[in-house]
Image (cartoon, rainbow, N blue to C red; front, side, top):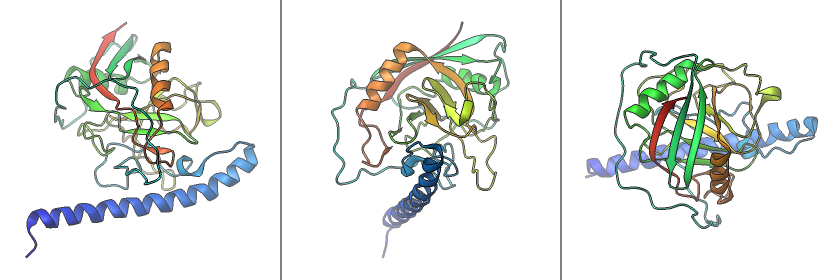
Length: 279
């Protein structure tokens, strides 16, 4: 007789295999699509992480097909040395909220979200006037200690160049229990569907093929360490400081562990403490 624990493990494994199969199929489609795009633009884009219609920067969903969920290292992947320090003592808080918090920030002000990570400090200047819901949400979550001791779970190193953080589960499937609207998608910085290096934006569940999943941001966000070709579907809400960019590039240089340009970072990136202050 199969025990409940054995059955649970079997179901978890079957779910994981289905996710892997979906990712493989998505990569094949992306390779074909991006080879055409590259020939037109004269730019080489690696298919495994092209994001024109593959929903690569998903986040904050536990039931939909999620490109940022669990990543398994390939057997041939060589792991680079970890450039980061040991994480501070403490545990991730398991916090869930029923609805988006009431906006209490000063929309005319600039706020700074300071991430004290195991790899160094990353300061993010957030513009409340352009993305009030997003900035207010982080001001609320950080005040609750939501990001403390969380891992940045995902690094992409081909086609798009981002570090993804903000999931207490560390799987790409976690969120605060509420969603926030898309904002600032017509930001002048996003010329030619490029998110420039230094941009911080929200991950979401938008599907360009079906035009479903708008206004689905939660707590996951990505930090762009090199100009990345992305459609303007992801709320840009912050800019990384110069010193923070040095930290981010150190993390990127250590690579990721899948060997395919999209996996968990080799650097152990843990946000020991996050704070938000009004400038």
